[in-house]
Length: 457
Image (cartoon, rainbow, N blue to C red; front, side, top):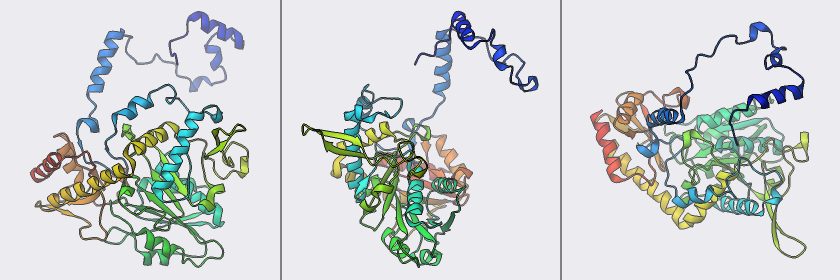
């Protein structure tokens, strides 16, 4: 798009077309006291060369994760991205400003989304998947709405170990509805117990939402928790079991489908999308076949035309603005097509074996680092000895405020982790709690360097 300023002649033509003789006349409906009547306090214009130097200097102040050693996690992770993804995604066939509404005109895009749906369904161990949502928190919220619609009930159980940002989105979604969200607290071990879930159940329970690995990096007992939820004293359909998952972890952990989940919602950033300042990201959504007609977002189907040729189309469009209006099953308008395509490329390149290798590297490297840190004076693992333990993240209890520890390490080019006592994490931990994440990118030398820095602090 061309953002070059319009000429005076073009401006006058536009004014004449709408029937006013000056720009000032456009603002006549605005009261004088509400107008800005001073000259803007901005510097004079400079040349293109000067602006390039100015912007270059500002950009040089940025300290990205790729230029440092990153042990930060908490929902966004520094994973390896194969170089071919950036090369292919920049092709004109893919790089579009928005998802095309006349989708059938783009058979290539629809085929890619169909492949994406197939991969997500296989990854989660569930029957069907949609062609993506906005991001992980939105996907979890859509799963909650689907459960409310399916059961007709007005009470949602959410594990207190679900990421606080996701819990905030869930509350926002139902803020104008007669629905109650009840959080099931975690025990000292950092995970939720089936006994606490059963205590929280009642006849109005629509679903149970559990994240695993949870916000502390610990693996929850999906199977036990979901089985407990199904024992709710309800009439009619049992509460839905909604699993919030990390797609890379499913390379080695049991899938939501294997653990009894009805719905799986996840953040797909780890599948080939860079950190990029926190978004945009990719929502993953899968469910059992019985919920096909209640699923949110877009669904791509495969068919054949009159000549027997394979074709793809959007199907079961009982959602948002298409045909159902106020009877739509969801108000989600579109999908993250570009990032779904990145994820498709990533999963295709990795394959089941590659994904398992990445997951196992995250697991073993995290245990190596956790063991080293636990051996330092003044540091310990907050949830040491828990069952079944953590996957690639763990909480470190420091002898000093985690903010101070992280700042000292950052000054040396190492992003040590996420302080859990920070307001941005809804203070889900103490002031001295630091969430450390390890991905396949981290080397032994980098982990040993973090250990040395922590010892020095």
